[in-house]
Image (cartoon, rainbow, N blue to C red; front, side, top):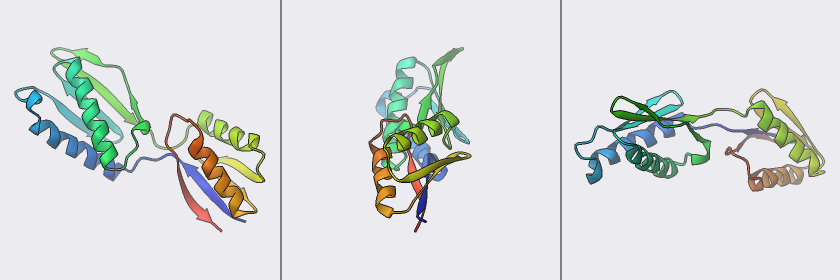
Length: 160
């Protein structure tokens, strides 16, 4: 019986490459000369630090552009509020791995409401979809791609 998994993961290697490219771009930008500004990557959290909140917003745009160049979807980035401490402003960008329970339930409900001949089940941080026909599974993939969710989804483990 054909099946596949719906997951929401960020490639950590590409994330690291995007942050390193953003650091390089920051070093070459004229408007960031003689300014204390930095990107720091700690597991799945990128900390953006600068001397003003305007520079923080510019740095977030630099990070988004570099994420797009490296193939990491910016939808997976969850920005926290800007925190002011001393003369520095900090902002954290969290990159969530896996699908949380509420989103998984929405996906399963959306698949069941589509009245396709497939079964969807939540298995930890992923949703497994099984069906008798490959065409039904491809219809589910199209449905998920068209859905306006707050996270990017990938399809893996396609079994025939």
